[in-house]
Length: 396
Image 1 (cartoon, rainbow, N blue to C red):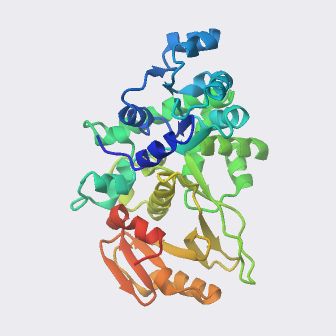
Image 2 (image 1 turned 90 degrees about the horizontal axis):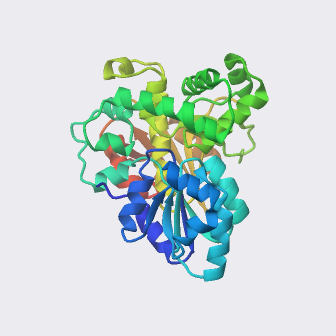
Image 3 (image 1 turned 135 degrees about the vertical axis):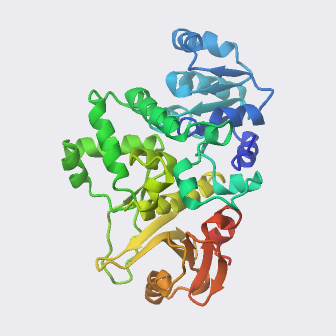
């Protein structure tokens, strides 16, 4: 089993809180993780219809069987349980009682905020990160970036041999037909699927909600609601712009990215390297990969992402800004495998404007070198496995 980086933080907070809540997209490995790090804890899955009906019809009786705590999987299926769990943990005043998992952030977070505020530590588990694969000694020496983008990072794809195209087709169908209905009563699922495909076609771009709504044949309010669903279920990530303008007008629309490039490629109809090689969105897909790696790095450490982008009205842009209390780290993302002076153009402009230090600047690109240059640091994509911490901490 590939060890998950988030496990260390979960075990640390398990000693400090009565409840651990682990949320994330379906098939990101939540069940495998909690059963691995809490092997002696009773386990119950609310996807099982008998367990679910018991919990729904007799919540007190259900929890009486697990009065000393348990792993309760897919807890969003019976969200009313959380109020009863609150009573138990308040009475026992003991840490490390319940471990809850859920696939729908949208439903689960609402109930947690109502019932378990201050009683639970909340963690978010995404598919594998490059760092986790690197720690597991998975070699990328002969791997091409195109192959990795198509495969994505869902754990099941790193176990037994499986047809990748079929996996994502089934994933999308299950998500649309089952999970979306649980989150919100959407009657026209084919239109929602069209909306999902339109979002994929906009990855790495500024999100114009009005244009998206018009192309899908829905109103602006519905488009906003559906974007919230995709965010809440960990399909898309809206990268917000950084507003510090340095006396320049800046763009204030977010950019849309997908957490997993395998899922993204499937939505774009890309099933092999030949199709991806010359696709007009290949650079945007690579950006999605890099942005997601930085988000995973922070989630795996129990942190909320402090990542942004910056762009002014004249088109000058920084793909990724890492915000820390004392400075901002600008990062450019380039798919090309040959380093040119153009790779540093945005960094030079931004550093001149913000009086930044080139030593704190990075280019992450589609090649394989790792270098320190006068205009910034170079990291090939394969170094995201072992160097992303150094990048995050602004060290070359």
